[in-house]
Image (cartoon, rainbow, N blue to C red; front, side):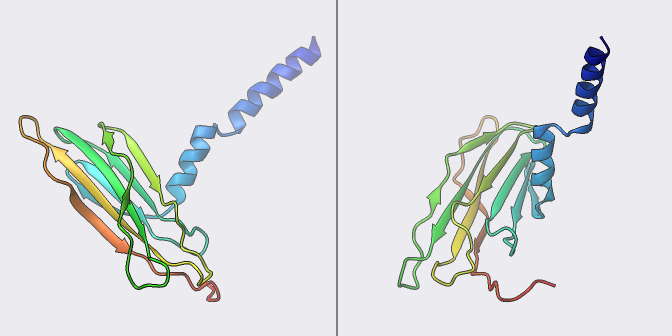
Length: 155
C-alpha cells in the first residue's frame, strides 16, 4: 500500500513540476525576438536571423477588428551564378480568427558558408470588411537578407 501511495505522490509531483509540452513550445517561440508591426487588428512580428538561429520567422497574431483577415508569406532566393532573384514562392493562405496565431518559418536559412545565396521574404495581408469585396494583397514588409559572417563573434 505504501508503494502505491508513493507512486501516486511521485506521479503527481512529476506532472506539477515538469512544464507541459505545449507550454514549453510556447516559451521557445516567445524567446525569439520579433520586430512587431501592429496593423488592422493583427500583430505582425518578423524575427531577424542571428548566428544562433539562421532562419527567419514571421508571427501573425489576430487581436481584434471587424471582418476577415488572410495572411501569407513569400520566400525567394538568389539565382545561382547571377545577381537576380527568383520569383516568390508563397505559402498557402491562412485565415486568422480573433485570438488565433500563425508562425511561418523559412525553408531556406542564412548560412555561414558563402556557397549558398541569401534569401528574401515578403509579408502580405488582405482585410475584408463586411459588405465589401476582397481587396488585393497589401505588402507589410519586404526584406532581402544578407549572408552571415560566422567568423565574426557577436559580443
